[in-house]
Length: 330
Image (cartoon, rainbow, N blue to C red):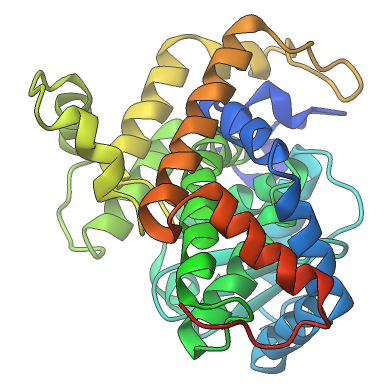
């Protein structure tokens, strides 16, 4: 059972590196080796895509505060205190298309909760959702997450400035990164609610549709079975089955989270032994190898979808040099 809000610990100056999943660290580093993405972000900002996208979201959402769902807003403030996040990103509730939440806004992050989550989840599980989203803020995931959300919208509306296939390739690369980022934020959620079982139960309830009578211990066992399978034909292709998803499979997330807890990292952070901002460790050879792994994976995605990195670079470069007009199609 999660501790009451007033009794939860706080982690002054905690760095996102304290709870960052190795896959997130490597995938983010791999993205940084693709200068094209930063140029795309800059172009989208110049064309006011981000502002327009954010305004579109906020136009059909309700901002929470002391007079709008104050208990939910208080859970947000508690998460910000736990993770020592300044600036108080605003919290909204909206009719999102599924049981989901999102955080967007490169310069001014905004946390958006799906109304179905707010209506159906127990308080502790909703607090875990909020802690997860605030983890994205602390980890500075919103930079690439905002680009992903905008490009997904352009893709769904058929307004791609460079043609469908180049845009789809970039979206799939960013989705691969985002799934890694999700693993870090499950850890942030655990720190916020101070109970990994709450996060595991949340993932089970979302995966199982909130059906009554679900057993979290059995779900954790299912996650371990998924992680330990020796099917040599299935394991290498698993990442391909997740390719178009925004989130990793729930059983994978539970397995990764419980392994982190079992290794003692959760308890070490709770005891005050954690990486603080300004004290982040240097890059290691292991991280360099992992980064190269994700760089190769991103390249494979681009090769499969857009015909190669050079072709993709040329198509986006032409748009970046232009005023942002329509591309030449697929």
